[in-house]
Amino acid sequence: MKATKLIIAAAILALSSCTGQQGQQQENNEQQQVEADGTPRVAPLPASVKVDALTDCEVPAAFTTDDFDWMGGNLTMTVYSEDLYDAVQVNELKEGDIVVYEGKEIEVKTIARDGRFVEINGGMGEENGASLAAGEGGTYHGASFDDHSTYTELGKAQLPLAEDFVIEDCGVEPLDPVTTIKTGQKQYFEKLEDYRQHFSALDTKVTVENGVITKITRRWIP
Image (cartoon, rainbow, N blue to C red; front, top):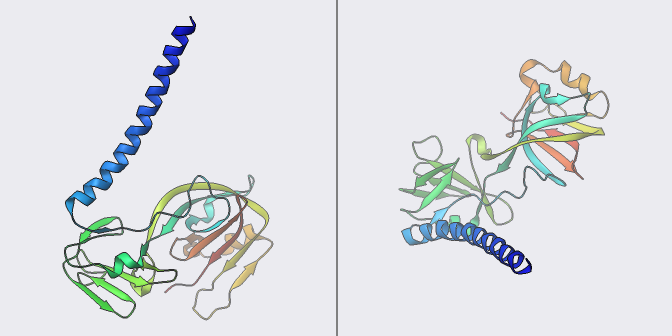
């Protein structure tokens, strides 16, 4: 009986080891495909947060006022990651390389460097074009119109709202003062015009502390 248990345990251990090796081997194969092809591929850096483990962070998010559960005290939002690129890789880009931009692989046919911008195939707005802009911390960000960043959707998350969570909301016009709401948040949202009840990753960031939403900030965009 003891020998049988040892055999079963050994088989389970071997199966677990095999599964882990297969996962590692698959990851290695994907890396080898890129290397074997010989074509450099520049993609956004991995997201700094996991959508199912938001504890202490500030994330771009999208939601509407209907996504608030005021009775339950939570918000369901779609979380995004800003598309950041390693500056060294961007600076080494050349014709024939591949750039992943807004989820698409783009072959670099032309590249122009103008100040802090790198324009690929004529830049954004052109067919198979892309624009990257130098940022902080040794990175570039995917650039859209008016130098807004591009974002990648990570998924949905539902988080509790702090009882004293704060709203910092921009006005309709660029020079309008920021409105800070510390009480009556539900009533504030309900009084917004319909189009202002939609928040996008382009203009909205949600601050999370210890897994609880403590602040929602919306900045003005053109």
